[in-house]
Image (cartoon, rainbow, N blue to C red; front, side):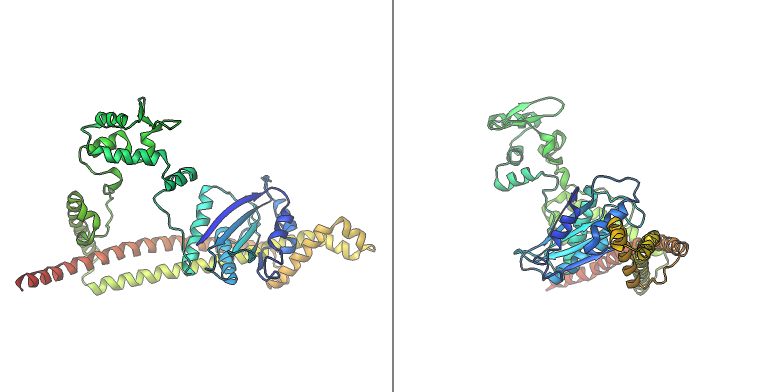
Length: 447
């Protein structure tokens, strides 16, 4: 299980980077990695990239922490997961420093990344959506590495205080919901329910929405805030014997969906209404399945399997090509970043080399010299010496971007078709198994 949290760095960027790179915490800096920069000069390189941003903003970087369950993962594997997460959520466009700390009971990663992209100099937008993307990516990577994952429960939407109170059995909302659930069977209508709630000690307040307050409760609780099963309309329906809104079958569109295994469906066993709906739904889906096979000229089960295999290969090939193209785009963007720095600071470095008093010159241009030398080292590592022309790299980047867009369109189409054909195949499998089950049941009855 990995837990993630992130926060902005508004000052002391260098101090934050120095902290996460502490040799005592990172096994002598063996668990320190970086991308698009060197860990030793990351603060300078972050600032250099930010200088090119139109919107300067107030943040110098962002700090992401990824903590693992004690004893569940080795430091090396945790570091690898952190690198995979960083490359996925940042898309190879932001400099970052990643370290893995082993000084606590639980292994955890620290990642500090720039708030401005070196590829297009746009700001990283941190919000609920971006955080949930980080969380989903982290959970998926943990699952791929065989680690436990935090499974979302049914408390989605609750505040931390409310969740804690519910767990402790002290939540006013939880108690009110339990009371309503208990009184519904004894109520003749909604007004009768409110009368019974008053007998239970609840104060009722009417207005646009009906609210309730327990004797020891400070504020009223609107019934509609308890969930879709507790609105006035939902409670009235439940008193009348209809099922809860949250348990009613979802309306489906015209697309083909999977047949429902009524015999093994718990909801169908508990609700005669749902079982009846499922039978009608299965008839519709069976008819749509047969129409699909006819319209697409599929005459045999083998032909259906062949088409599904072909589409799956097409989807997987497109996905692999997308990943290869994305890696090349990231590599090229990195070369372009260092090449731009190299070309821009080369005159300063040449003056430094030619100066008679190099120490004096260095005192006035230390940051520029450090950046130039770092860019030269990285270009050499990337095999980009001599430095490619900006025009050539921009042309290649444009071609790669167009190729990626084309591959994405192809991948989405193939993925959609694979999903459709998988549904068709599963429905056909279910339909073919029905006669066998009936035959087995008939034989059992004869015995």
